[in-house]
Length: 183
Picture 1 (tube, helix red, strand yellow):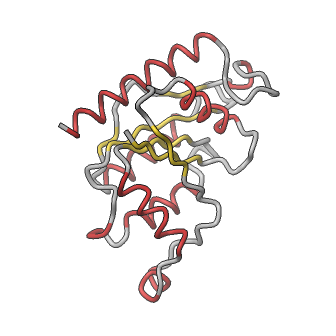
Picture 2 (cartoon, helix red, strand yellow):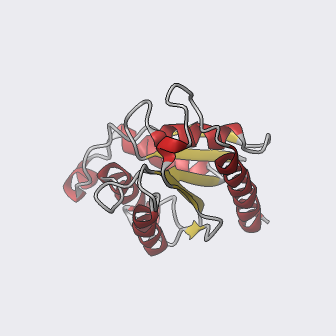
């Protein structure tokens, strides 16, 4: 299965990058990954879209279009999703007749030093994706709170045993979720 990954944190050593790496490490062997970089996508503008869709947006849409599923790993900034993720989704959703997101199986994940993890960011992401008619996995949720206590800052992945167990359960569930829609 081809899985597209989007990371909502632009920092190279972010907690969410470590979470994304851990998801990849514990994913089924039949998954292949295509991470789409979103930091160079310009702010959505219908005038720009009408005159010329930027190449980075074309790459975003094509990557999503050919994927069996999409995993969005995102931090929470000021009780919401980062603008860079919302912007990528706005481009991917427009125009609606060309969007690769309707009926696409999608899973959400996020890590934060806060106790509740990324619950509010994921709620906003879920609302946006449901409006686009994507198939957002309802659970298990992957909200990694107090992530700074669960990761070795020098490591590329999260190694804390209980969190790794939750990640394994999450990837198994997403594998089943994708299969539900591919049959």
